[in-house]
Each structure stands twice: as C-alpha cells, then as structure tokens.
Image (tube, rainbow over all chains, first blue to last red; front, side):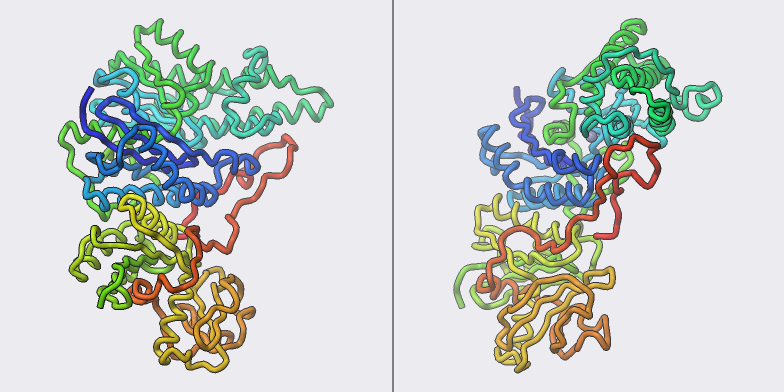
Length: 346
Length: 231
Ligand SMILES: [Zn+2]
C-alpha cells in the first residue's frame, strides 16, 4: 500500500495518542492513558488529564516512531485533534503537533475528533461507502452522524442532550459498587435478567420523536437506576446487581440501536459504522447485529483498540485529507472544545 | 560574539520568545495575550528567528520558562519546547520563570541587586494569591517558588508582574514587571536547572466523590467540568 506518511496526535480527553499511518495502512498506534489517575474521582479530571498529556507526549511520540520504524523527519504531514474535547488537554496535543510541523517544515492539519472516530475504519475495512451513518458512543460523546464525505461533509443527525452514554455507565457503576470506568464492569456484571426492571428509554416517546428523533438522553435513566437501588436498600433487601446491570444496559443499548437503525432508514444509508469506547460493549454489538440484519444494514466496527481514543484515527483522517488535496491549517489555529462535527478541518 | 545559539520560550503569563548567540540577545518578542498561547507561540518563534536572521536549524539549545503560572498557558510553552527539542534533536532545559525576572532586576542594578536586603519576585496567581520567590542581593534564589496570599510574602522590595497588584501588602519597587525573553535566551543556561516539568505548585482542583452510598446522583456530584479558571 502507499499514500502519505502521516503522524497523528490526539489529546482530547484522557488518552495521549500518537499514531502513524501510510495512507490506509497502520504503522503505529501508541496510547498512554491516564485512566488510573481518574479512578478515585469517578470521572476524568481535566487538570489531571492535561498534566498527564504533557508528561506522556514526547515518550509516546518516540515510541510511535520506534514502532513504525521510521525517523520523524520522514513524515509528510502532521494531523492533530483541534476539538471537540477538554480545552486544557487539547492544547497540549496541538502545541506538540505544531512543534513537530514547524521543526520539520511539514504541513499541519487540525482536525475534528469525531470525524477521526469515523475515519479510523479506513484502516480496518478500507474505503467508506458514502453516504453512511455512524454511531459514536463513549464517555465523552453520543452522536449519530451522516457521513457524505469523511474529509469534508459530515452532518450531525442527533446527539445526547445531557450525559454521554459512557458517563451514564460510570455513574450507574458507582451506584452498583462497581469500579470506574463503568462500561466494561457493567458489561461483565450484566449476566442477569435484562427485563427485571423496565428502565426508561430516553427521548423515545412519540412526542419526543418530533423534535428529538435522533437525540439521546441518559440522565433520567441514571436517576431511575439510582432510585430503584435506593428503594431496594431502604427496604433492607439485597440489590440484584446482575439483573440491574443487565436491565440498565438493555435500556441504553435498546435506544442506541433503535435510533441508529431509524437513522439508516431515514437517510437511506446501508452502512452503519460504530465507534467510541462503548462500541466495545457486547450487548450493543449484539443488538445492533440483530437489528441490522433485520434492516439489511451492514455494520462496520473497528477493533476495540481503534474504537477508543487514539492517534491513528487522527493520522488516517489527516492522510485522507492530504490524499484528497485538502489545504493545511494555519500555524495560528487554536483548540475548540466544542468544535462542531461539520467542521472537519480547522 | 559567539557561543551556542539559544531559543527561549516562556508562556507562564503572556507569550514570549527570544533568541541569543552566547550572551548576546538577538531577538526578544512578547505578545501581551494571556489567553491565546497555543495560537501565538509558533508564529512568534518564527518572527523571533527571522529578526535574529536565523532559522530553526541554527538553534543549538532551547530553554523554557517552567512558571509558575496559569497551567493551560504554561503547558503550551513547555510542550512546544520539549517537542521542538525532540524533533530538532537539540538540548532542552527548563528554568524557574521567576529566576529570569530576578536576573533582569539584578542586571538593572549592575549585578549588585541594588537591594542590600535582597528582594522578592512576584507574579499573579489569581484567587487573591501570588507566586513568589525570595532572592539575595546578587539575585540568587533563597526561598520559593511558592504560592500564597500576599500577606505571606516576605516584606522585602518586590518586583515582577504582581508587584503592583497588592499595594500596602507588597513593597513594590522600581524594577522589571515583564519577563524579557532575550534575557532568558542569553542567560537561561546559567540559571539553576529546574527540570522539564511545569512548576505547578498547586494540586489539581478535584474532589473525590464521597465513598459508596448508592444515593441519588445529584448535579453537584458530577465530575469537574473543564473550566476557564486555569487558563
Ligand atoms: Zn472520542
């Protein structure tokens, strides 16, 4: 395979990611996570994450070059997450990317993190049939997107109006006495009866579908789980963790998969791409597979290491933009913590 | 003049870049912007090099101010210096930003410090506090850097960006109020090596959630959101 040799730097949340790709070929994907430092806080602490990014940046960059077996000077371009994300975290990666681009006199591409979650599948399954729909679910985002062109045309169909799905997992995990981050622990604990409690499905009532057809809400669900558990404890009864976890997970995955399928129907997309950390969730994958089969929609899911935040997704998005002749970013670009997904290149 | 060519960066308050050859400052540029460090820094470095008639390939060493200062801006300078040094394969060192202001003050007084009793350098730490360090009359750091209310600062002649912020509590005297990145480039390598990590002095703002108690999760228990407070 060939294509431009692109370095990608990602630092929007708690993972310091440096990836190197040549076109659609993955050469390195090094990630330093500060997740352990956030465990006792039960969520990502921005300042802790920012400090960790700075500490990890140069070593992670060096590891990526070693893994890819290249000299940094060989790269053709530098891509970096310009947003959305935590401001203090984003600027560390942006400063680092600018420094590489300036030192080596290479073009800089400031790109959208969400578009990176979509583009990463190029590394796994090759060119994206466009248009396609994408469902991105993590601790930081819950979005349904229509991708007409991953380098220039992405439309947000809907997103969460309150908590991200991953955040709801973290909070429910705390209620159930499970560790942080909640996603994998709830998934593992959810061996019980998913129908024991009919937890609410946010924004699925007929009246909500008018204005929020593709939007999500997990705040009410989280509160409902907490209330249910609290009532149980007040009555001096044991909390059936396996059943509550399964019922909660069912509520989340039911809404995510139903709205994703509805988006495919509404847009005529025959491909649904899944990304973000929650894409690794076993129930979400199973439900999506089942419903996609019924709707003749083809699922594309990158491997888990590419679903979570990483530098390779930014590198491959950069490589795709370079290949299609996108213009480089100026050296005075800033980070934008709420960069809309419609702005793929800053 | 000859000697190694040094590029100096400091983003602990505003955005500053300087270039020196040996002890001769060739460029000293500052943008009085306390918010847009990541936007301003590389263009400013480019301009400083152009003013010195040099390119990045001519640089032998990079020295960066490690603060103390507001964290988000501070990290921009340190990340830039660290990655530039790695990418260009040059030496890199961090110094305490207050030491640079102290050196400026001493130099203004013919190297004798001018203040027989010694002096203090103070910068704004917000939240009604200052970052400060105490120096002897020759400009050698005796105490600090520390962060705290102006009441805790030794009652000595005070210079630096925060010297005039607390009249009556800090003894402001004539002296430098802003860092000169040309001085940082010229003498940075002679200042005490402060490592490569920012001098944060404060722990991250973060509250640990109250243990267990599966109760209703209220808004106040949400993990801290990104704030602009530390910018
Ligand atoms: Zn993400």
